[in-house]
Image (cartoon, rainbow, N blue to C red; front, side, top):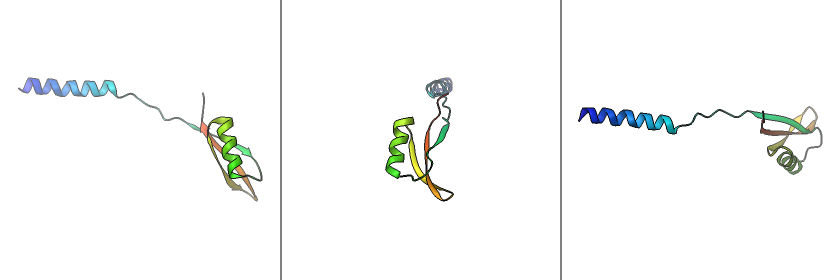
Length: 74
């Protein structure tokens, strides 16, 4: 019984080790798309079309700018 239990335990560990794939975190790149007079809708659409990413307006000094976030391609 103990041999069978030990064998089953190591087989489970082996199968789990094979089935779990190593993943790496993907880096996120940024680009300042619209430097002034940002509009949320235009910012979102521009970032989606240009980089297949997401974008949002933020206050940069005295103006609102569009910052796009997208997956880096190396």
